[in-house]
Length: 278
Ligand code: HPA
Image (cartoon, rainbow, N blue to C red; front, top):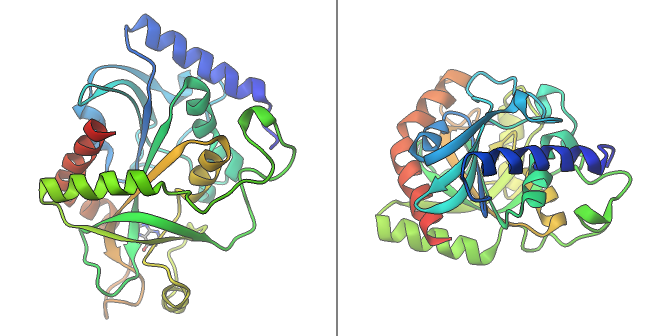
């Protein structure tokens, strides 16, 4: 790690102070909304809203479909922080910066991190609009948010990733989905650095390696969260079938954002159900 501990602490102190001024309890849950999935933030009650640029040390989100707002408030009566917009490796940030907010949330006292994203479906049984519970991930590039000098206040040098996506939280998500009648797939999220979408050959390779969905986010955050002991739940919204899977079609950002919006109803219902159950 290169970012000094004090930078995390400054951001956490600022957020704590603003939450207190706004009469909001400190969050126990943090939810991060992926591309096109920002609507959930509007469903929070009595929230304090902090644009990322106001938070000391916070990176800026440069992606159009990401608002760049942190809300501290309540979702289904549970003290929750919702981030609309995250930071991506493809924007030029290193993975430590991508995962900056995770360590800030840990310092604020958050215990459970819900990571959501838009992803391409690789599993041939998946359809556009499906929601996929992330059971595990594959990241074959060398970068890690935990590379370099270690600060024991944010975790240990070596740490287990066997239960990176909490089995207990996955069961909670399955139960919620069943109760709400929302079909929920489950599978392995394969990280690609982007920003280019994959080639059809890469998608065939990802399928052979065991990937069910492919995307450009989430894994850095899940790694930093495992290191500091946060429980993680991951949900992918399948916004398109991956490159080469539908003859005559191309993968585009517009398709990703449009289809994420189409899945937003089920997504928001599931997330509210999960918030209530956590
Ligand atoms: N590939 C990578 N990332 C994505 C995709 C995809 O097909 N869809 C949404 N995010």
